[in-house]
Image (cartoon, rainbow, N blue to C red; front, side, top):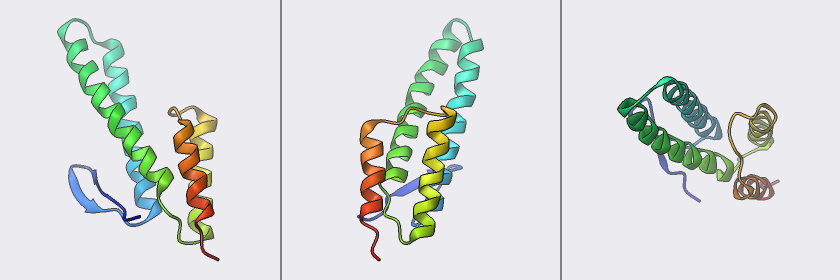
Length: 114
């Protein structure tokens, strides 16, 4: 499966390594947290506008999470990196992990060539 082009910091770049995809997801989670804090303190039309942006950013986070989960691993080091990252996500409650994300994650591990 070819890796899709992802956007981080507004610049398009090829994300061909698991580390790049995990970093893109971390940035998406951070953006959701920032907008969520702003939305909680906003009132009136600002809250509506921030809420719409938050919905969009949450959708982008879900896409980044799915890409990171489904990305094929090249070696045991990348497999351990992905496993540790998703373990932290689950353990710290940083974001919701869907069943499909877990299936994609485990499926990427089974495709590792020995």
